[in-house]
Length: 224
Image (cartoon, rainbow, N blue to C red):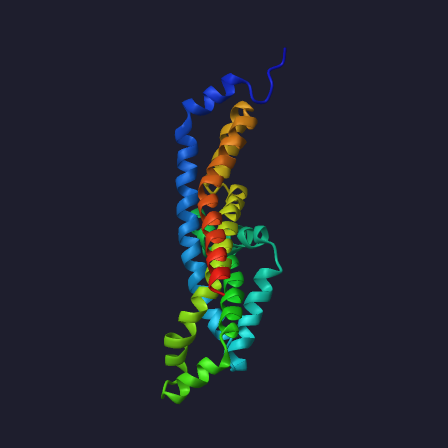
């Protein structure tokens, strides 16, 4: 009789070789953290530029946002991994993951921050100007503090998407959780338990963020 995809001995094999999944989990968590920091830095810079009145700042921002939002992340990662070596630049796979995922999500973060800045009433900026604040002081001390409350829920949602998108590294042998699960299961065909455990580990990373987002949205609704 052919054993099913979730036979007990397959689960026992997963338990016996849990360090494989733990290593992938650690890599995914670290790539996610560094990529998120990069996305936030890029998003803040391009978001502020996109909300400015200067065409010289808004133009490059639109190019960045439109390009990375409208091309697949897989292609972008493949370009970093396979294309840059032709230009003499060979990046470690870990760096490819951080840069690829971070730059991609930076475009979405930029739009979130731009929308948040533009949602602040113009009267707030006019009041700051009447107090002698210049444009930079107004942005830092008046606009951004109010923007933070508006953008935190969608930013947290974007962080959840970012964590899940790190799985694209499996396509370039990135050592992430999905890659480790695929590699391990390919050697013994125990795909069922391997993917269940992998899904639960992604859930462990994403669920706390998702629950935090819901709490923040409820709090914002009450305050509104």
